[in-house]
Image (tube, rainbow over all chains, first blue to last red; front, side):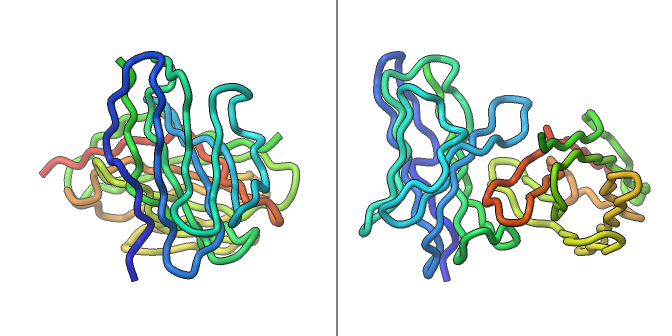
Length: 115
Length: 112
């Protein structure tokens, strides 16, 4: 059973470009969470999604950031018009059940660098 | 609000030394507590957890006890190895919430 997969592992963008980060949850998991890890910081919750639904986006910046988890395919975290402050590691986690933080499994992360 | 405070790093130890990484929390509800480990270039892995007061989580020689009276969940290991070098994160979740709240992480380096 493959773990949580994220791609790309490393992404370099220039200021003003768009960044698309993908997350494929573990097989059988229908709940996806995105976290951001700024340099020298812990992970901060961004958004929680189920298939075709955003359940909690209280950690998402109000502008430029969006997330989706379509019926088919991976979850996508999109950052429009990136700025240097968006440089961070973005981690995705998945779980089979709602509200079950005991079974949040993390992917290896995407490290975004904005030049 | 809910928050986690863990000791500032980095921590450098010699092999076979005793390890303690302090973690305290503030929570509006009754949290579950976790320790995650992040090896270089990898994602987080759950190391151990405890879901109620006085529970002891343990794994790979690491232990942590959920202390409600001191709101703490300190990580300990009796004899560290070079392979334990990593960043360790303390985290909590409140029942019914899907969010994990993390501390800033403590980088541990174990020298041979």
